Image 1 (cartoon, rainbow, N blue to C red):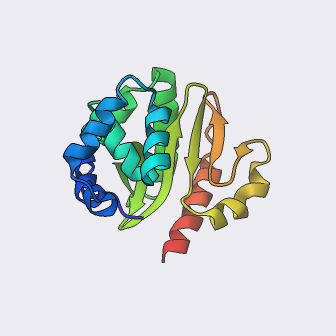
Image 2: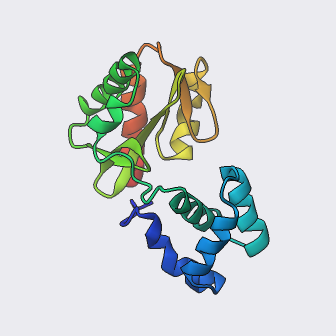
Image 3: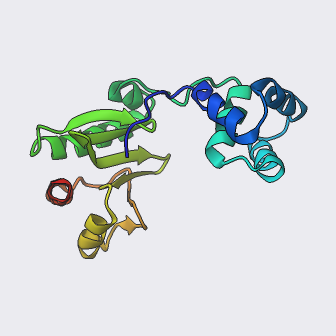
Length: 185
C-alpha cells in the first residue's frame, strides 16, 4: 500500500466529476443544501442518492466542512505533541524498542499515524486512543503467528491493543517486526 501522493481533498475532484457526471459546482450546491447536517448524514446522503464511494463522499464532505487536506501531521514529532505526555512517552518507548534492533527502519507519518517503513514496505504502525495504544505489523499472517504469545493482550483481526500503562515487551515487538521484515523480502 503506497502513501497517497496528494493528500488534498481537491485531488479527488477530477475523479468525482468523471465518475458521477457533474461538475464540482453542482456537488458544492448539493453540499450547501446539506449544511448543518451531521457528518454521517452527509456521507449517507451522497452514498445513497448519488452512489458515491466512501472515499469520494468523505473528500467532498470534509472539503465542504473546511478541511482541505487529509494530512494533519508532517512529522512524527508533531503527532507525539498531540498525545498526553505519558502516552507519548510510551509510544516513543515502543518505537525505540523496535528501532534499537532495526535501525534501518524509517519512522514516518502515513494516514496520520506513525509508521515504520523499510524501503517501500510498512512493517509496523501505531495509533492511539484515550485509554489504549493499538499497533499492527501490516500482516495478518504475522499477527496470527504471534497470537498465541499475546493471550494477555487485546488482539483483534488486524491490530493489537494495549493499555497506556503496558510494560513495553521489547522482545515481542522485535520478533513481530523481524517476522514482518522477513515477509517483505
